[in-house]
Image (tube, rainbow over the protein chains, first blue to last red):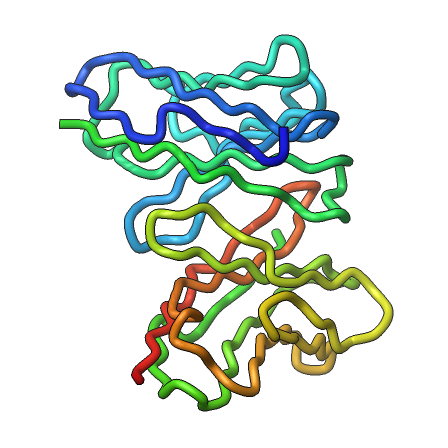
Length: 115
Length: 111
C-alpha cells in the first residue's frame, strides 16, 4: 500500500481484557517497529522485526505484551490482561532496510483506552 | 546508549517570525538524525534527516536543520512560521537500527 496502515484506529478495552492491534507496513519494507506513545510524551520503542524475525523486544514493558509478524508483512501487537497504564497510542513504523537510512514511515496509530 | 535531548518543552512564536527548535544528541560516531512532526491525532511525518555529508539539511515545508558536531546539536529552523506549523516536533537518533525519540517540543503559533 501507499502508507503504513493501522487498525483499529481507536480501541476501548475493559481492564483485564485482551486486545490485538494490527499493522500493515508498506509493501516490500523489510523492517517493522512498534512504539508506545503516552499522552504528552515521545514515542517509546517496544519491538522490532526484520522480515519475520523479531530482532529486538527490549522495549516490551511486561510479558503481557507480545508481537508477531509470521509471514514478514502484517504484524500484530497483542496485550493480555490490559491495565490502565497500557492506555496510550501505539504506533507502527516500517522501513525499507534494517538501518532505516531511507527513513521510517509511521502509521496514524491506534489509540488504546483501558477503562 | 544513544539518546537525544530536546530542552524546550513548549515554544510560542508569532506567525511570520523565525523559529529554532533545539536538539542535542549523545553519540560517539556520526549519528543518523531525524526530525519528525506530529499534528494532533496524527502519526509522525518525516521533516528531514541527516546521515553524512553537507551539514545543512533541507526538508519539507520550508524547514532546515544544521548538524554541528562541536556542539552535538541538530537544531531545526524555519525562517518564517505559518499558523499550520503548530504541532509537536520530535528529534530522533538511530540506535542499533531503531529510532530513539526525544521528549518533543510543542510549537504554538499566534496570529
